[in-house]
Image (cartoon, rainbow, N blue to C red; front, side):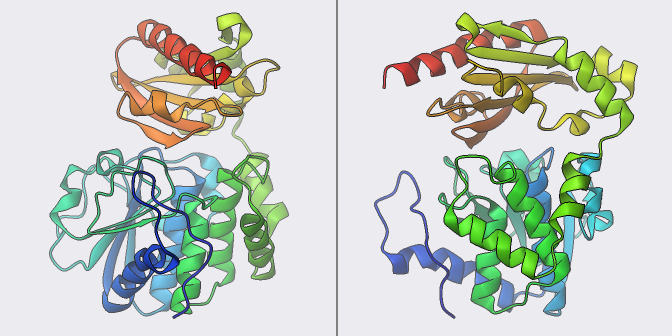
Length: 346
């Protein structure tokens, strides 16, 4: 098997040789080849990359004659109804009763820490950790980390190439969703030549960008649109207009019957305001405030999320914080302003 290229180094470790960097791909490939039954999961409140990567790999495993079962702790936005196989994804409070007996491994997609899966029993069996996030805790028996990858879906494509498993139209569509959601339709700074080349390849393999992108970005439930208008009404600018916040209190969600998952990406509206360098969208849910952060340039919101047990990328991150909406917002405004100030002094 010829390893995919190029590879990124794992932060916090000495620079690796190409052979050492490919070891993670070979270790995962060996696990997939030798095993027969696999669970797949990802982080809580799964997004397009998590779902697309897991479903693409599940399709590939089944085509290779293996069993694959996708489980998530939380539901996802209605926009992802277009993903081939989405109806098979189970939403569960715990992993299947027969875990880990009888399962070859659980494949955890795009999740920097075991805790963020929402499954505390995860570590009882063999864990394969496949991720592209800075700060990944390397919690798996096998850890495949590719920080240069635009999306975990890009890493799945590399794995399939290494295994010489074909990319079917169903797999291509799932990988397309993973790629376009994590690159913002190829608008974000993580868009690379490799990501663009993969996009072209996925279209050639059967992904239909027009249909899929309409479903993801242009087909929102009326309740979600009404809720968006109310959320935008909570917009506040702080720190001289450099930090923006949006809020979705529980009362607002209950009044409109919208799901918090349907508001995914709304934080980008705040990030897009002229002069704003960092933005936060705060959603009240089940005794905690779910926080989604976005930033521009070198403003590091991942460090803000990490301070509260979350994670992500420099310009896109998130976490959950216990407390009231007002107090959490005040705390985060100070921390985001500090992140913006740190950029100014670089």
